[in-house]
Length: 236
Image (cartoon, rainbow, N blue to C red; front, top):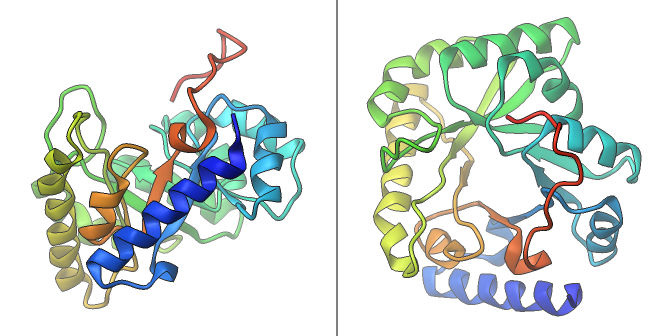
């Protein structure tokens, strides 16, 4: 694996997608997905200028944070169980995968206990896939005001995972749906929401063309994801 070459290719793809969409390169943030990657790989990525990393599991992240410089930022991008909320609030700078009012309330409670305000994204299952977590669009709109009223929560935008497809263009309607849903949420809120987290290794260019401000890239950057070391690790 040549991490520098991979990052350079990804950067070229981001720049080209931004140009097609008439956007500035600075409008898109790359979240390096380091699930199952060892801390040394994270540090190698940071040496190339990456400092924002996405993780799916609390326990794995806790270990890596202890082995990495303190200025790294970490986003929770996997499904969060309510009994892991306290650790998530402590270790992550943003939780991108809030998929219910009950979870938002638990995050609010934990944030209040630590005198912290927690930035979140609301995860939307735009394709209605039974195997994925996330709000239904209508359910999100119904609960949006209640979540926004939680004093220790800051809604920064929406997140989605498009259905896997060999053709990235098949993801476009789902990304467009999320962008349009963000507009509906902004009408409720009365102010703009800054972020759309959408697009992964195979489809992030289409996501950028549809308005993504954060893309979550793992395999295109690090290669095939290694298997987890421990089988008894918690599963979110």
